[in-house]
Image 1 (cartoon, rainbow, N blue to C red):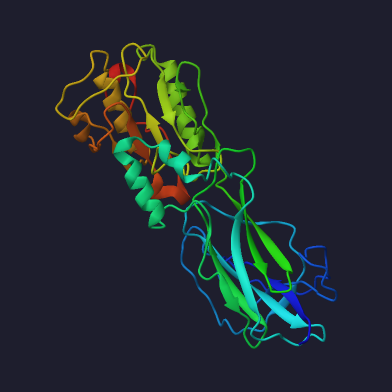
Image 2 (cartoon, one colour):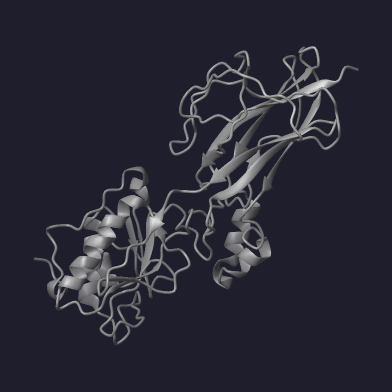
Length: 367
């Protein structure tokens, strides 16, 4: 049997067609010393990116593959568990003819943001007993992905010498200094392997703080979508400038540096959600219950003003258990007596939150 050559077809940025040319000579990427092997990225598809819109526009998959130069920049996806790309491996003999029927094994490996970040028991322990089973069930059902997945792991090359793969991104962004990194690795029986790096993360920014206006307390996730930063700054400056508001707004959770799974939350993945403390008269934690009762230090007037501000700034949902807040659009949800969950996720791609001019902060009332 002739010695097959091994070419890895590139994953596609599925937002525009990609047809390039070039070749990649043998490099020290083998598990065994197999002489004469060449490696190249080859494009067998002409596709559109499935990233934020999650709509594929895939043209004829029989397009003749073209060899691509080696890519130095990793694929970049966001940790939403839905974005994907397609690529493949081309195996040819030394004379350049395609090797049909060669088994190719694909797998996904985590390079950084690994244990304990992806260790299931450790993650589960960060959820309260009331929601731990829900978390474990979602992982088991594939609704929460701790590692990217492949549509198929074992594929034989076709008559063109091509075996294709489809990689779906995980929910792992993380809080480390660099985006999460995974690899799609392809191997053939000779021991030759190639890999493609996949960076995972949203480009989030630190939550702005304003002395006397907005503070962060006890939050591991301190990053937000860039389009919300100006709103938080404006809100903080308005609170700080209003003499009757002596207590700053307190954020207790935003998103991790690169977004993605953030225990004990099931949301807070995209930088468009916050948890805020209800306003209090002394700056300490407080609470309000669905039956209308509340802690002695609960400042209902200013909390209701915050709810109106959030909706006026384009928030899609506010969860909070004070029934007075429901009048202004908030909704009750178990576990939300001691904080307001505020989300702009319905406008994730076009966030433009601004402090509503029709509201002022004095005495917690509308102008």
